[in-house]
Image (cartoon, rainbow, N blue to C red; front, top):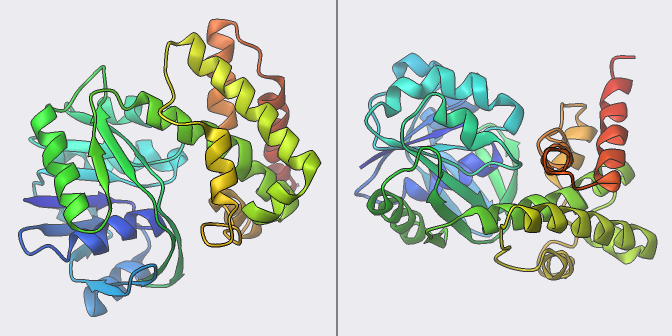
Length: 306
């Protein structure tokens, strides 16, 4: 079984390193960061924090060097999906491709290049601390299911879920993964930009009543959009927000969007709050709070080049 992780940043590295510990798997990674790729090939891909391990795998910064793979796991930032899968799709001509990315719309992009697509949602979190080294900061579960318009076979989804679980990333294969995906999209859209706009960790955002109330407004709007599409969330985003604020879970965790803002990198706001706002507009559900947050973060991004 050959698996390639496309986009070996923090999340991609968690999948690549853990899967590489399974002797029955051959793991590859494609990433544009040449220093990261060189470090992985020289020393392995090291995880610290929630697990201490080093996975031995083959990493490339040239997608043409990828062999044919049974599975692809796409973990790029959402705004890089098109470029990444267009370059790597040849490796999955006879395989299946799963998105474990944030936001809405990634599966549609993958389906334009690959015939068997898996809708995925993952909750582990971490950060790249050095080339070839990732700090695993938050544990969590992953859900995989068929992308309705271009589905991977159920048996293949179960095969990939089983490998991830054996590697230490608990993963469920389900018939409908939309509920899990929308739960995370709503959670992320209600919390990540608040951290990005204030500079606060998740726990500190939740300690401020006005910010916590704003998060609830964002949750309510996102849930209304999901309900209107007959998507049943698999869990309550409000409960997840409070759970993540616990000191032993993710109180001090800086959301990926805050990390992007601090580094003056483009954020995933277009696929989070922007995705919810576009979905709401398409079916006549108002999302004024999401539209406001979307505009504010886009303004922050614009300030870097003003």
